[in-house]
Amino acid sequence: MTSLSNKPLFNQFISSLVFFLLVVVILDFVCSSTASVSFVTSPFIYTNNKVKVAEERKEAKALLKWKTNLHSKSQTFLSSWAGSNPCNWAGINCDNKSRSVTHLNLSSHNLKGTLHDLSFQSFPNLLSVDLSYNTLFGTIPSNIVHLSKLSVLNLSYNQFTGRIPSEIGRLTSLHVFYLAANQMSGHIPKELGGLASLSELNLSSNNLKGTIPIFLGNLSNLTTLYLYENQLSGSIPQELGMLSSLTDLELSTNSLTGTIPASLGNLSNLTTLYLYENQLSGSIPQELGMLSSLTDLELSTNSLTARIMCFDTSYWTSFVGTFGYTAPEHAYTMEVSEKCDVYSFGVVTLEVIMGRHPGDLISSFLSTSIASSSYDVLLEDVLDQRLALPTGQVAEKVVLVAKIALACLHTNPHSPSQVFYIFSIIGIELGSLLYYDAQRQSLAASMFI
Image 1 (cartoon, rainbow, N blue to C red):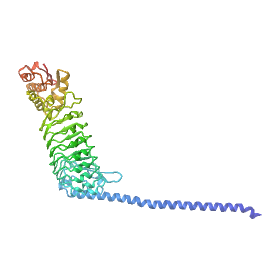
Image 2 (image 1 turned 90 degrees about the vertical axis):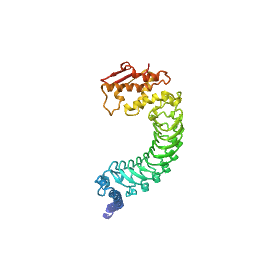
Image 3 (image 1 turned 180 degrees about the vertical axis):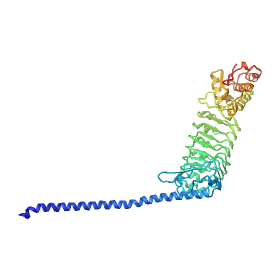
Image 4 (image 1 turned 180 degrees about the horizontal axis):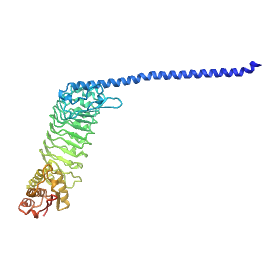
């Protein structure tokens, strides 16, 4: 009876023992799994850190090798370049996470040497290179193509020679490419037309020859295009009229021929257009009058003819810049008379006393003259700010010169007495023509009779 009565207790003990053993097995399994994960993860972290260190050493080694091949005086400006961690060096920036070099900015560091000992393939994460305003020379290595992530490349104001590497056209991430003020020769590579992300291109002040590639018309994101002061020839491609984002187009001081493409009138965002000192001929397209954003237009030293715009056009462009030496009304009437010389005389006179072309002053003067018969301007705002303000009799003579210059800009080209009026000012009593406040140094001149 006793054994039977204790049987339930025995069964309960067996059940508890089985449950305990099961828990032990489960815990052992969990611990084993965690250990396995740790065993797998730890080597991964260790390997990743090892790769970062190796990458840093590789970039540091490449930079130090380039440094040792620069001119000896240049190396003194890179005294911080020592050790195996380039992220702490002058002109170097790294990504915080990967510790890889992303920016190389050594502008104006008095560096003298070449780029041939710089291993570009050692910098897979480089985003910008700025080596401008140094004395770097030689050719630009074609292995620069290894900088696949490069967004900014500025090599301006050095002494680089040779051709522009066509391989640069494969840097598809490039947004800014500056190569101004070097001694580059040859043609502009057509491959640059493949830089779809490019927004700024400056190849000015070199010795580039040949024609402007029509493929540049493919750069829909381009905002500035500087090709001035080269030896470019041929016509201006009409494809440039496809650059819808362009704000600044400067092709001056070349040997460009032919006519100005009417397609440039499609550049609705254009604010600056410099085409002076070329061999352009033919008429000035009326489509330029549609450039409602244009503020600076320079077309001088060409063989251009005909009108720019009509009176009844709904667009009006400020007539400033070197081209402003010609009276605006003669740009669209094509009538040539002594009034042309009078206007030019006024512009040149103002330029002498102002120290710069008086484009803004002329625009203000003409717009004010439409609604008023007088125009007031502070003498101190007119004169060359680099010079001391005149006093006494000198100031009176300067005021008279300014009066004559402004009178030459009379807005009524058909006034029969205008020319006589201008040149008779000298013989009229100064006090009857203008009010001169010596304290404020202001000039108030009544421009019309």
